[in-house]
Structures are given as structure tokens and as C-alpha cells.
Length: 341
View: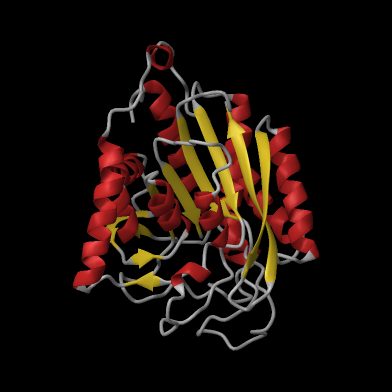
């Protein structure tokens, strides 16, 4: 993960404008957002347990780096599937093989966990569960040939979604929620000068977007989590998110502000990020937004000092950040059930 793309050229603006029209039109169509069944009872928003989420990060790290084709990757996959099934989710393991830019064929798995799988109306939540195969941050020259731990970049988003799955079992919703853990997200070419490098990232979401787990699958919208666990995290409004679903971005950030989390959810614009939401939105026309930590000012290209280094370990994780993101997501979901979001 990932590359910030500064969209200054006319061609880029036209491309994003076209994509915006395709996705935004779908977003503005009426949906069954508040059926009589949903609003006939009140759904209390559960409390997001930050210590539980923190332990989910620690458990992922116990397997070591989760690079495709590694033993740690296989062990973590089995644990994730077992955990989601234990929380009453119906789980599909979408196995696939894809060639990385290095030429290596990656044995990969998108993990798709369904809450209320029979429901027609659905909301999509996602994160990536693999980790970077090399510590290639320009901020560090240490052990660059070794894979990173991936506590924040990968582990934090997965941990938040696992805790949400646990709470959904305790307090079910009247509509479907799909939690997708994308694989092979973090195996792309680094460096702004790499030509045509965008499609070397997010291989799992690209595969899923072209091979949906269910024919005709649709969701009202999606929310992607990426690097959502660091201390003093800063989540600005990422560019592609504001193009694919501007209304959803504004609603989520306004909700976070009302909940007292504006110190995390900044009402500020950021550059476009090559991330899973980009390929979900462009390949499936499901509008998806990205909650991602961009601690530097917009346009600098920085994801934080620990990004793609061996410092991305449990020490960078702050349980309060996990709670802020998780509690906002729960407020979105249960607000939808109450017809208040």
C-alpha cells in the first residue's frame, strides 16, 4: 500500500469525472434504506470494545508476516475463517492465483463473510489482510529485503472488522453486511516513477471485482478500512472517495464529528490513493469510500513514519484509534437500521 496520485492533469480530471458520473448516478438512485420492518423497532448501537480489537491485531502478528505463499499467510487465513464462522457469519473462501509484478505466482484468498446472507439489501465493509513483502519505505534502510509485520497496514482494518463481526452476532441487523478481507493488496510496485504501476496493487479486489462471489451481487455502498490503528491517526477525505460517493463521505465525517471524533476524521481534502476502493468502485459500480490514515498534509505522499518499515508493529497501535473507527462504523450500520443515517 499504496500510492498517492495527485490529479492535476486535464486527462485525469476527465477520467475521474466519467467515473464519478457512472458511480454517483447509481448512488443517488432510491434504495430500500428504511423498510417498515427496519424502522418498526429501535436498534441500539453496540459498544465497540477497543481491547478486543487490539487483541485481534496482536493475534494476526503472532503468525508473522502474512505474505502470500508463506506459512504465516496460510495460518492466518485459517484463523480468520474460523473466527468469522464462530461469529455466525457465512464464509466464502475465494481462492485464486495471480502473478505479481515480480513474476511470482501468488496463491491468494479473498475471505468473504456474510451477515444475513439471505437479505437482499447489503452494505459492504472491507480491509486487506496480507502484508508487504519488503520494507521499502524511503524513510528506512533497515532489513529492506524482509517482509514487514503489518500491524497497522493490514492488521488494524482486519481487527476492527472482526470486532464488528463479533458484535453483529450479539445484536443482529435486519439487512445484510458483507465483510470482505482482500488478499494480495500490498504486493505492488513502489515508486512514483514506475510506469503503469497502479494495477500491480490491490490484486485481490481486482480479482473479486471481475469474479463476484455471487452472480449479480450488489451493495448499497462500501466502506474500506486501511491503516486505521495508529496513535493520532488522521483520516482526511480521500479524493477518489469524494468522487465515487461524496454524499457518503460527508455523512460519515459529519457523524464522526457529532460523536466527538473530529480529531481523527478531519474535514480536509487529500489526494487520490490507489487502494481497494478504487477497483471496487470502477469494476462493480458499487460506490466505496476509504478511511485511511494520511498523517501528513494533503499531497506530500507520506503515510507515516512506520509505513512499510519494521516499525509497523504492535507498538504503533493505539486501541483508542481502533475504537474511534469501529464505533463510527457501528453508528453507520445501526443508524441505517433505525433510518437515522
